[in-house]
Structures are given as structure tokens and as C-alpha cells.
Picture (cartoon, rainbow, N blue to C red):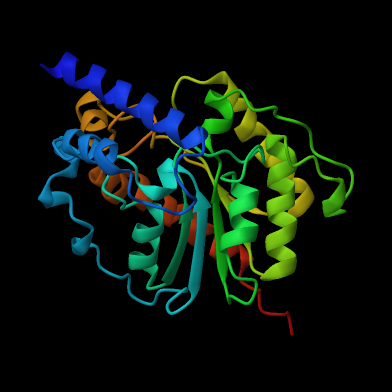
Length: 276
């Protein structure tokens, strides 16, 4: 039965991706009708999605450096929480740091700006320019790797009009520039946990090239050790498949690591007292 369940789960995932890529769902719409209902019935039975792993049990940290601040997260199914009932890194970080959350996440979408559901298009269309974001966190989308988007290269220019948005890197540069100019807040990218993908590994490496150019923050689950070195039993609890965490995965595995890395980033960015 376990094998049958895994096969059905994979088939449903492919169907969701095909439907989304075809543009049959409007950006930002969570409801996927009967297909979403069938998906939820399967993922809800995952051990990591049981009531014991509710996000309601997350408590705010004492003396949060971001309490009352505005967090915006941009991404695809991992940021939405496709296999966890819509609870993902945005909900975890906002709960732990005491932040207000704006989430712009649609499954099966890419950084590369290839259609109206891509990251860039949704960012420009759905996120108000007059918002007061204090922190902007963007997902390094696995879809660019799995869908074979053109990777591109880091531009020598800082002129946003010169970035090739149809490539993954060009779209990332566009997002960074747009966020910095529009909202004037720090930009961070977060990676997924390690899975079998040379293409995604190349994306992670290029992320560090972008960091040198744009001084962005990186929350790197891909290279984190011993984070990725977990038992098969724990991985089965934390992950619905190779890419999508369960609620337990976000709450008890990804979340604490992202939190620790974010705290390190904030500590490094904090102005140091001037010498007398």
C-alpha cells in the first residue's frame, strides 16, 4: 500500500504541475478544486502532517530582533506549503520572530520569467509598491531546475532593463534590484534541502556569485551540515517527497535551521559600535 500511495502522490504532483504551468489557475489562488482535495487527502495522511505538528504550538522567541516588522516571502509550492496544508517557512518565521507576513506563492512557478505566473510577474502585479516591507525572502525555486529553465549568467550591469528575465539568474537579479529600489529592505534567498539535482546545485553556486555583486543574504539549507545528515526515518516524517516538506518538516527541521541562519545574518548586519 505504501508503494501505491507514493505512486498516486507522484501522479497527482505531476498533474498539479501541468495544470499550473498551463495557466489554468490564477496567480495567488489557493483552491485547486477536486484535484487539490485529492492531493490533500493523501498528504494529510502523512505522519508529518498529523495534529501533533500543528504550527499553533510555535511560540515567539524572547527579545526577537524583528518583532512587529513586516516580512514578505516570494516563491512557489515550497513557499506555499503544497504538501503541508499551506503552512511553510513564512508562517514559521513570522510566528517565531513576531512578524506580520505577506506571502506571494504559487505552485509550479519559476524564477525565470516565462509566463504571467512566474516570480517576477507576480511580484510586480501582486505586491503593492507602497508596502512597508522590512525583510524580503525569496525561494530559490526547484522548478527552474526540474523544468529546465535557462540558467543564464550574472550580468556586469546594474541596470534592471538589461537583465534577461527569461533566464533564472536574470530574473533573480531583477527581483533583487526591484526589491531594493521599491521597498529598500534586505533581500535574502533560501534554498531547499539537498536532493538529487545537479541543476539545482548549479543554481545554488550561482546564488553565491549574486551575493558578491548585490550583497544579499543567503539561507542555505542545501549546503548545511549536519542538517542534511538525518536518518531515513526522520526524512520520511519531515518530507512528503524529495522536495516538499510536511508540517513537521517545516516546523521541526527546516524552520529551526532557517531561524538560526537568519539570526546569524541579522547579527552580522547589525551596526557595530564605533571605537572611541
